[in-house]
Image (cartoon, rainbow, N blue to C red; front, side):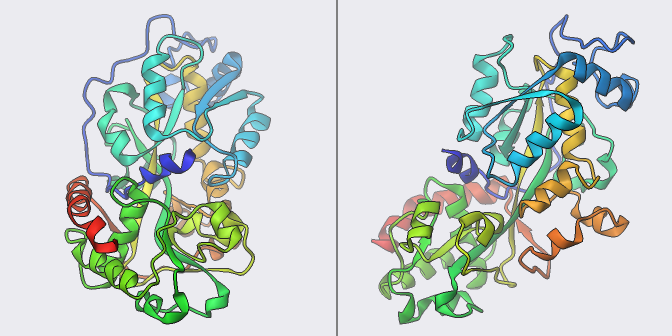
Length: 376
C-alpha cells in the first residue's frame, strides 16, 4: 500500500551528505536536442544548454516513468496531468500504492530497461541509504531550497512534507492539548495509523506525544508513557486508522501527518486538525533521479516542473493538495505562493523539529523494547 511508503516518512532531517558513486548514465542514454547534449550527465538545465534545450530533448523522448504516486496523494493526480498537458509528454505511473523501498527495488531490478523508473519520491531513510542509485542535479530554484533539505550535490532534494497532527471528529468539540484525549468522552477513540514499531508515521505520532509531554527528539519515553495512560483510560484504540475506518467513524481521532489529516483528504466534512504548538514535529519526502534513467531529459524536466514556483508548478500544486512545499518560505517572501491554499494549512508557530537518522533509530529501538507492554 502507498501508506506503507508514507510510513517511511520518518521526518529525518536532511543532514549534509556528499553522494559517493553517483555515476553518469550509461553510454548512449543521451537525449537528442540538436546540440548533442547527454542529459544523463547534465547536473543542471544550464549545463545542458538551458531550459529550451531541456524541454526539446524531453519532448523528443516523449515519456516519463514515475512510480508509487497515487493520484489522491499530495495532489499527484493533478500534478501528473498538468505536466502531461504542459509538455505533451506521456507519464507512465507504475505501482501507485508502492513503498519507498519498492521504488528503489524497481530501479535495481529494471535497470537498463525502458520500464525502469526515471525518478523516485521517497522517504528520507530510503533516500539516504541509496544515494549510489541517484544522479546529481540542481533545479533552477536551487537557491530557494533550504540547505538542510538537500544534498549539496543535488543527489536528493526534499520536496514536500508536513507536521505530525491530531485529526478528529468535531463531535468532540475542540482539542487544545493532547491531555484532552484522556477525557472519558474519547473512550476507544484515539488511534495511530500503524504500529509504531514498524510504521514510521506512527512512530512520529508517539514522538509528538513525547515532545508534548516534556520529552525531546532524543527521548521518546514520555510518548510511550502517554499512550500507556490513554490505554489505561480506555481511550486508545488498537485499530490502525485508514481512510475507511475514519469514514466509518471507527477511528474518530487519528495521529498522522497534517496533510493526510485534512478534511479534504480523509473525506469527512466535520473533521478538525490540531498541531500541538509545543510539539511541532516535521517530516519531508525527497525527489531523486535514477542515474540510469531511460528518459534522462524528461526526468530532469520533471524535477524542474516540481520545483517551479509558477502558479501551475509543482510547488503550488503540492500546496493545493495540503502538503507544505520545500520552497514555501521563499515563495511567501517573493509573492509566488498560492495564498488561498496556504491559508488552509493548519496553523503552526514556533520552530519545527526534524528527527535525525540517529534519533529515529534510537526511538525505534525504545519502541521495540517498550511499546507492546505499554499498550497491552
